[in-house]
Image 1 (tube, rainbow, N blue to C red):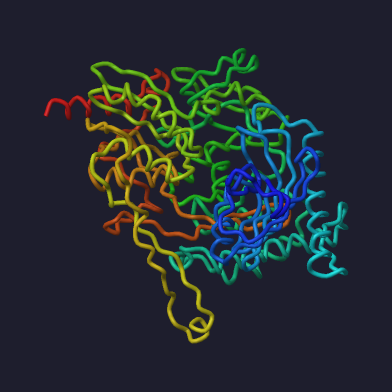
Image 2: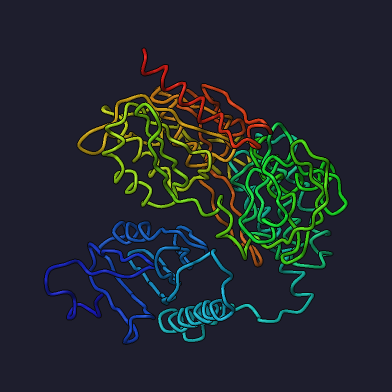
Length: 564
C-alpha cells in the first residue's frame, strides 16, 4: 500500500492495491493516492497509469469469486470466499485512471450453519459505507452537487411493483441482446414474452411469486447457464438426496440426523407422493421452472427439488422401499440447518484411494478452486506409480476450466490443441436495421494444454461421468475425448457450458449464456451432453445394494487396456 509518490515502497517493489480479497500489483503508474483508516479496514485508491492499456490490465485482473456486477468499466461486488475473510469493493475504470473503494468483512462464508443476524447486519452496514464513500468521492471529483441513487429501505407497494416490472424488463432485454442460442430457439417467441408476462409480474403478491415468473420465463430458453441465481424465498428440503434412477425418483443418500435415523428410510426407496400430490403431477409443476440444456439434466434437477417447500415446514411423503409396501412418513424440511449431516454436500474437493491391481481412484468434485490442482499434485507421486487411473467427475458441477486443464497437463507428454471451439454473437445496430442475418465472432479454440511438471502419468485413464457433470467439468472432457486420452464411462453429462454474463435485477440476479462451445470437429455437446464411450446406468437394485456399476465398468475397462 502507498499514500503518494513520496511514500511509495523504498525497496523497489511495485505498489499494490487491495480489491476484494486480491492484492493487485500496479505496473506502469504515474502517480497514486491511497486513503484508509488506521486498521486498513476501509480504503480508497486513486491511481493514474501511464497509458490506458496498463489501467485496463489491472482492472481485468481484479476478477474473483463474487456476487455483484462486472462490466467493461466498473466492478461492484462483495467476494464469496469460503477460505478467507471477504470484502466489499467498487472499482471504476476511466481511461488511464482507476478508482478503488473497499471495505473489509471480517468473516468467511459458511454453509455449515445459518448465518447469525448480526453478520447480515454487518454486511449491510458495510455496503452502505462503501456507497456513501463512493457518493462522497463523486462529489469531490465529479461535481459538488452529485447525488447517487440509494434505494429506499421501505419502498411502497406501488414502488415495489414498478421495480419488479423494471427488473423483468431488464432481464428480457439482456436475454435479447446476449443469449447466444436465441436464434436456435424457434419455438420460443421471445418478443411475445414481455407483453404476456409483465401483467403477471405487476400482479405478483410476493417476492417469491415475482422471482418464480422470472425463473419460469428463463426456463423456456432451455439452457443450464441461463437462469435465476439463488433460491426463491425461504424454501428447503429434508436431508435426503433424490436422484433419477431408471426414470424414477429414488432416495440415493440419507442424512445422518436423529429424525432420519429413527425413520429408517432405506436407500433405493421410491417417492410416490408428496403432500397429497402424486409424483407425476408434482414433476410437471417442477419442470416448468427449471433451466436446463438437456432433458436428462432438467429431470435430474426436478427430482432433487421434489420435496422442496417452506423452510422449517414438514413434508408428508409416501414412499416405497425395496421389497416393502408403501408407507407414509413426515419429514422436516431442514437441510440448511443440517448441511454437515448430508454426505453429498460435505464431500472434499478431491478424494484419493488405491484400488486393486495398481489402479488409483481420484474423485475431482469441483474445479471451483485452484486448490484442486494443488491437491492433485500432492497425490501425483502415488498416481504416477499406478498402473491405471480412474478420475471421477460425476459430482463436479464446474468452476474454472483452467483448473481442469491443469490436471490434464499432468497426463500428457505432448501438448494438446484439441480443446473446444467457441463462438459468440455480434450485434451491429445498423446491420440489424438493414435486416441482415445474425453475425458471429468465431473465437477459435479454448487454448493449448502444455505438459506440466517434471513427469507425466502415461498409463490408461478412465473418467466417470453423469448428469451432474456440468460446465467446466464438460470442458475438461472435450480434449480427453477428442484425443482419446481417456475412456469415458457412465451416462451423458448435463450438456451445458459457456460463459454467462450476470445481470442484476430487482432483489436478484440472472445469468445469461454468451458463449457457444463445441468439440473441435464441430460436434455439439451443449444441449446434448458429452456421451460416454462405455454407457452404464444404475438400477434401483444397485442403489439398494450399495453397488457402483459405473466404477466397476471402469475397472474392467482399465484391466482390458492393461492387457493389450
